[in-house]
Structures are given as C-alpha cells and as structure tokens.
Length: 169
Image 1 (cartoon, rainbow, N blue to C red):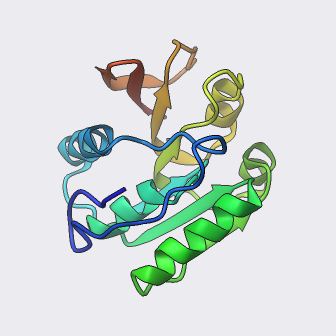
Image 2: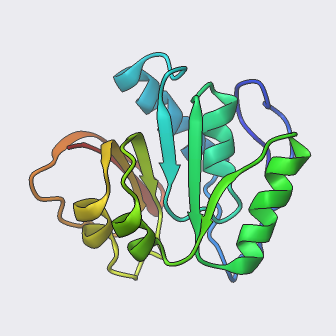
C-alpha cells in the first residue's frame, strides 16, 4: 500500500495479512480525506482517531496531510506490530493503544476532531462505537446500512461494495 497525498506521498507501507484486516483502498482513502477537507478545511490543528488501525494507513494518511495528532486503536497484536513498523519507517512514533476498541473507547476521555471507524463489517459494532466515541466528525467505512441516531449526516459515498458515511455529533 502507498500513502496517497501529503508529505509522505508515495511512501510504501506494510499491510497485515488480509485474513486479519481489510485494507482501505487508495481511492477510498483519497475520497475520505477530500470529503474531510471540504468539511474542515485545513487539518493543521486537527486531531484524528483511527479506531480499528489495521496497517495504520488511515492514521498515516492523516499525518501526511497535516493532522497535528493521530491516535490508533488496534486489537490484533500482529497488526499492532505492523503499525509500529510502518510509523518507524517514516521516522514517526505511533500513539498506539492495543486492545478491544469498544473497551478503549469507553476509557478514552480525549475528544477528537475526526474519528474513523472501520470494524469488521458483520461485527455489529458501529452503533456501540458511534454512541460512545468522543469525536466531532465520525467517518464510517461500511458495507451495510446502520443506524446513527441523533447524528447529522454530512456526506455519503459508495465505492463499489464499500460505503463511506460522514456524520457530525
């Protein structure tokens, strides 16, 4: 996988085994950050939380594009090791929390400007994460529709079998 824009544009990162994660395609990543830019403008004073880190690509894209702070949650220890390697290859130290994202969200007191959630599609975790996350803008990558009560739908776009939904608290 390759970072699509910003100061690390073109840099390759390692991806975990696809049996463990489902990498976000480059066109989806570009779409997400283009939509976020149209909503937020400059990212330089913004914070980003990637709730299901995988390879760490979404957090790295956020840092590459100028987000001032990124935190990553990841349950799988092999994926967490790959996240660390990917950050190290760019001379960065990840703000990585290893554990169950649903439990980490409940312990997390910090508020983020953007929260990216991409759990296993059939997990049923969307509503639980969204209702407990402390973020202004929530970006969800999903295959099936889900309920997001009391949130404002800002944007939604389909990329083949994947959808990106951007919500505001």
